[in-house]
Image 1 (cartoon, rainbow, N blue to C red):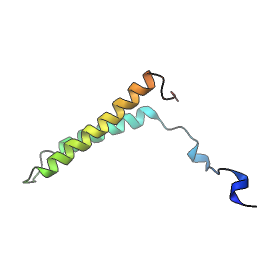
Image 2 (tube, rainbow, N blue to C red):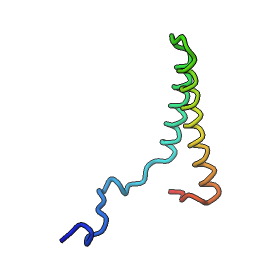
Image 3 (cartoon, rainbow, N blue to C red):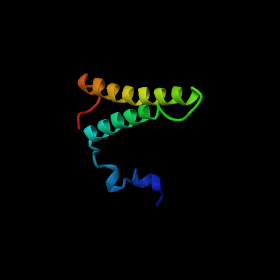
Image 4 (cartoon, one colour):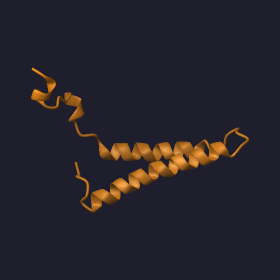
Amino acid sequence: MSAEEHGEVYAPDQLKPTNRRRAQRGAIISAVVLLMFFWGNQEGNTEKVWLVALAIGLVAVVFGDVVLRKAGLRPND
């Protein structure tokens, strides 16, 4: 028998829902920690640009998730 005859195979932990609130809090805390690295011992501004961009990206993902869930475009697990 080939794998195509059986369909998709999932591990039990792949089907467990994740804690959405915990993931959102973790992303926000990570963004804050990234911004705390802003005051370091670096001399150039390249690191600062990356830190701000990554922090904004994390906050944007969380904000987008909240907006999509409120609009009903993502399931509320």
